Figure: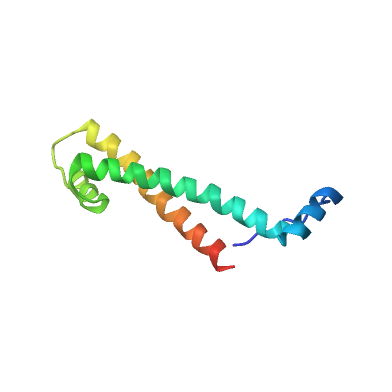
Length: 105
């Protein structure tokens, strides 16, 4: 789903002249800025995934299966970590997809 956001963006003459001299488009700058923000998010969630992989010595899917297959047991730390790990795992994948979309434009 795409949402069109159309606003009239007025670029001051000073900036427009600098962009022209540098042969840079304002759209390219916005695209690069968004990509930098996205890459920061990817790095953050990648680090969180690595933390949990090291802590539990397994990948997310394997840990999720372990927690979900526990019968008559409760391990609140594991359940809390699973929720945190799932959030990091899903956001890592989401932001990777967004980075790919921006790079592909």
